[in-house]
Image (cartoon, rainbow, N blue to C red; front, side, top):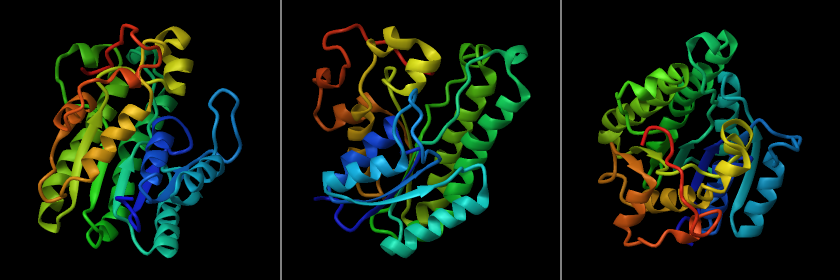
Length: 272
């Protein structure tokens, strides 16, 4: 139980990668703040903050389900306050919540552009802003932001510039926090998958069942998070990690267990 009495706040934790991270760290005894919008299940997406809370408790962790839309600062502040009141502090923040739309400029509605900016960039910034005072007092404190290495090859901008600039902004936040918080002993890193991950976004927006079968399970990212946040925060900061590289550094080279379909050809994720 490596994370007994440690509190991990995860945005977008009602399903997919966020849920997988919650359950992985619950097995290590962590207190998990399940922060997301879903309180009623959408059949296309599955999961609510309450269903994940039950699974976290069953896995050996302690859970706090908090409904929050990170577009609204007052909701973020209330979420942080509830987490601190219940668990006494915050040791790890996982910035997982994100909006996606892979369209060129003319096909990107202004409303959708604003949504990606307000969640991916502004929301991530504000979650960090309001958690940092508690992270500074945390035990081996880490911030992990689910965003890619910044690759300025124009092909990553040309196809879906509105989305790309928000994900790169998230990575800039991760790197900026590493520099800003180094003296306080708070680690900040970005993490991104080498391959597509089987999530609702992949199934509903990107490639359907066919792409899901060429993807890895969310548990791949969850294990990578586990390995990063158990490292000393003073030494492990300022990186834009790829999940495979994290696993290799841990001596794990056989990743077949993470494939949705064992032996299937895997599809590279965006930006890598």
